[in-house]
Length: 370
Ligand SMILES: *Cc1c(COP(=O)(O)O)cnc(C)c1O
Image 1: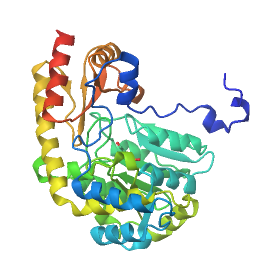
Image 2: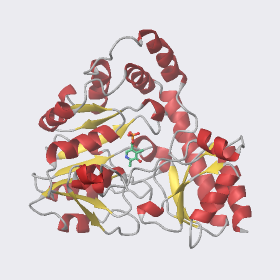
Image 3: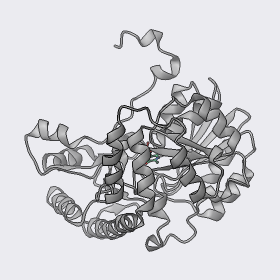
Image 4: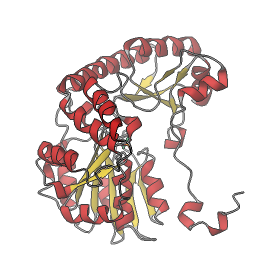
């Protein structure tokens, strides 16, 4: 029993903390083994590109200074990239920040936030911490059921979260359907389209016909917010930088509660440099497309059900119960992610790694399941 439990605000009392993927160092300590691979947190297996790394080194000369609290240079780059005004951007310590800010700005105790079954774990956390009620709509074929989400809207709905693609299912929504949905949502409800995997999903080689860039609809829908991150395809998860794009008035509200200097100077510099590194992004995408194919084919050959994914990860059914398989993979030095807490018992989520990492994961799974 937590000695402060009775003093905690009710939303916090019922919260389960976010479960991150197990760090490599922790497994090393526990098992005393090396050569561990982590395919658990949807990180870019190539890491950051040379330009971002050079920017980190250069920025480290100025560590005694506070960062630019407005992130002017990065915002200027992002505004040009997305064809929006700088005042529409809310920078975050990861895109987790704007995902939280929008709820803190709009949701009072008793208000409702809609998201899908199997949706990203941050949504229930930020909703409940604010005292909001989570309205979870059942998934359809593992993905978001837009009809069910629309039917769930009430006068108390404030925010709807839609991850496109969704993590951990990898499912994605077509532009026509998503746009029609947003157009049908009343203006008192903010629709947040979480595009953490946009760079992967939108790559031509992924061949997702109709996968949309929701940021292009911002001028049409004042109640639309889009989030992006440097944590996934850009390879900068450790630096924590992401952003929200929205109507300037919503960005204004979010910037009122944004902690000053929430994005550090090294992260600002690295993110800006990463945007210039088109070659590294292209290589990252190529590694992902090949790796997704390798894992999908390999897992299917083991007779396992794979949910087709638009991201840099996939969820696969490994049996009646996933924990024993997860544990045996751990003991073999392979960290994946159990997704029981996403209402997906029997499944694990595997992040696409380098070719040899994917192969080792497949070979180990084959021997575990034999
Ligand atoms: C990884 C992820 C994020 C991004 O988290 P950061 O805070 O930007 O590192 C957001 N949404 C989804 C669905 C994700 O999988």
